[in-house]
Image 1 (cartoon, rainbow, N blue to C red):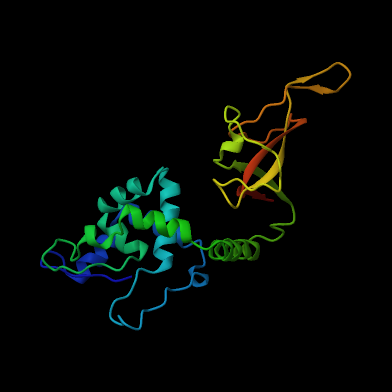
Image 2: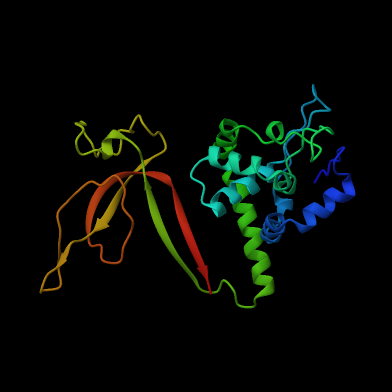
Length: 239
């Protein structure tokens, strides 16, 4: 972390401000739970040896903060960071130094634009997040004997935003698995179980429908075909 100085605060004062800021300390404790050594540093451009990009870990921390604060967009995330300059330093972003400003750097020029944050969120490699999660689980198993012997999980399917999932749109061969929807080249055709009423003989009765989005439940029984994204959210409960 780079600690700047300014005509208002020298470096020793900046360190004290960081140490006594409740928000900074809260997120420092949160980020300390992760092994950041598994997150690779971005390569330095040979043509611009003096210009270093922001560390990838800074973006990952910012996206974790986005989830933790409940923000729906990167625009909200950026606005929050602009209001908390010390937190920007704690995340690891490389400050655009300016000694004439109170904190010694230009926070508006330091924090990436909302468009660039969205871009980094899109291109963030899954293997980096998997390595970060795997390292965290490994550390937990070292601290808590027997952790991970029993695993419970719940899966929420993410349905593709394609016209094949819109019952009002006419689509020829809607459920032809060999016909890939143009709106999403990565989505796959799957089967969704659901149910309505349980009959006296124990069977389940329900009407077929094609939803734009459903969550898996315990009482689901009959099938409903729908195109879904390859990505899915998995919640792990380790006991």
